[in-house]
Amino acid sequence: MLIHLDESELLKRLSEGDRRAFTTLYNRNINNLYRYIYLISKSAELTEEIVQCVFIKIWERRQSMEHIHSFQSYVYRSAKNLLLDHIKKTKAEAKVLVLAQPDSEESPETSDAAVNYKEFYMMAQDAINLLPEKRRRIVELRTREELSLDEIADRLSLSKSTVKNQLYAGMDFVRKYLQANGELTLGLLVAAAWWRI
Image 1 (cartoon, rainbow, N blue to C red):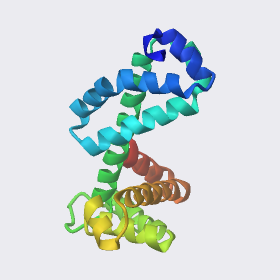
Image 2: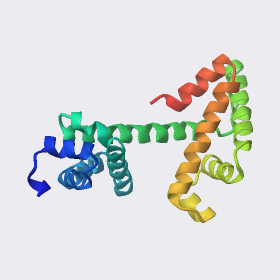
Image 3: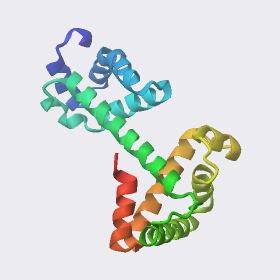
Image 4: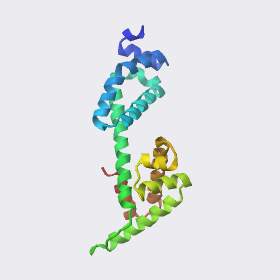
């Protein structure tokens, strides 16, 4: 039985496409990996999503698995990277939520900064207006009405995963549009707003 094989032999078999070896490695690591991710994320839904993504990627890259020295280290590192990607996207989205709001108060020292902000805001609206209708509606509900993913899914009768995918695609388009069409200073502002952590 495969359950008695050591890790190196299981990885060798996995690299040859052995599904039973994959299942054995999965069963050996799933509980600890789940606890590790949940300890950081505090979200059962996000934890399940990341665990699923980790093992999908392992199966997709199975041919290179024979050269892994420690499977446990590999899955933990993969999970951590996916979690960091999620945090970056969430923080980038939060930055856009702030920047997409109209400026309500005039500051005495605004001048160039105010002009840049208004240009940025108008350009962001132009980019949002170029999105396909469903994607545009999702971005608007998130940035203007500040609805959660669950609230948007309920309002539009869509799954939460569809809303999330459409939102990330829409935000990514807006970011690229701003970088492609803005001046240098505006481009730096946008890049900082999206990627600074």
